[in-house]
Length: 327
Ligand SMILES: NC(=O)c1ccc[n+]([C@@H]2O[C@H](COP(=O)([O-])OP(=O)(O)OC[C@H]3O[C@@H](n4cnc5c(N)ncnc54)[C@H](OP(=O)(O)O)[C@@H]3O)[C@@H](O)[C@H]2O)c1
Figure 1 (cartoon, rainbow, N blue to C red):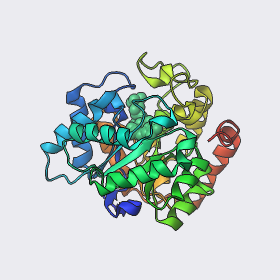
Figure 2 (figure 1 turned 90 degrees about the vertical axis):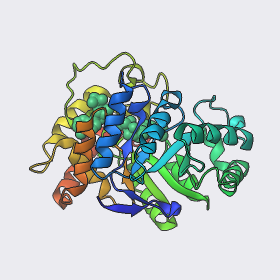
Figure 3 (figure 1 turned 30 degrees about the vertical axis):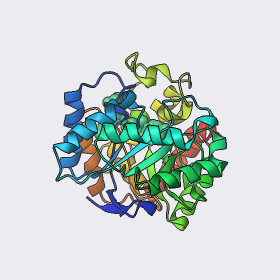
């Protein structure tokens, strides 16, 4: 699979990675056995980049990855984790002492001395302008607890502030055919600064697969049930902030843009990897079949200009009013 340099980490990662929130919690039940089968399917398909977080299943996702990779020393997977969401979202919690404790826990969960990349996990906005926070992250690098740090952001303004920090290696942001705003300023700024872009929620939580109807019901312990209106965390993380009924209709229209031989989900992933400035896209998968299909999107031909224009038109007509000014 095509590899790209992940910003200031200087390390290569596959253009299609794997999001592993599903392997922790919040997406219905996924057994440890199934979680390992998903990791294995991704690696066998050429994926060399996993995204996880200390909070996914309160460490379960990290532990499953650590266990799996100990059995696959040949795999050479770059693991990006995140910290900050096991504590309350109070800027006062973003201290060097807490960073040391949080990264020590992730190092133990993943079974490594040095974390490849730790991302602040959608921190409160004041954290972005705190020199002490970024000095503390530099200290973690100097102590070799982490090799590099990045930020997972909610808004484009937060992304631009993070990119302006000289030590930021990467920015993780929502980017998909239902979330086009990062194309305007964030991707050009990241490319200019040499900061990697990790595109998350690429399938709008599965909507862009075109498999759901207005009557689709998700499990009670799936955020697509309990966070539909932002009840538990930022609304933008569930279905990319698009109202479900609107999203189902727009996804049906998007599905018609899929080229022959590609599914709508693969078309969405292909669209993302060809946006200038994107390093890697990290679809979540709940089954080995999904992981394999997602990895295969890297081999599709670039989408033609007419399809790119059709995506823009679909966004402007159906989606823009709901999301563009919010994130
Ligand atoms: N704040 C943050 O930093 C943050 C927030 C959100 C996500 N993330 C990261 O980004 C990753 C990706 O985002 P996400 O998992 O939220 O959303 P996503 O990748 O947009 O959607 C994942 C869902 O799409 C469906 N799907 C996946 N592959 C498919 C395929 N080949 N065909 C059909 N359907 C498919 C599955 O739905 P079903 O379950 O219905 O099968 C899967 O659970 C996460 O796993 C996590 O690592 C980070």
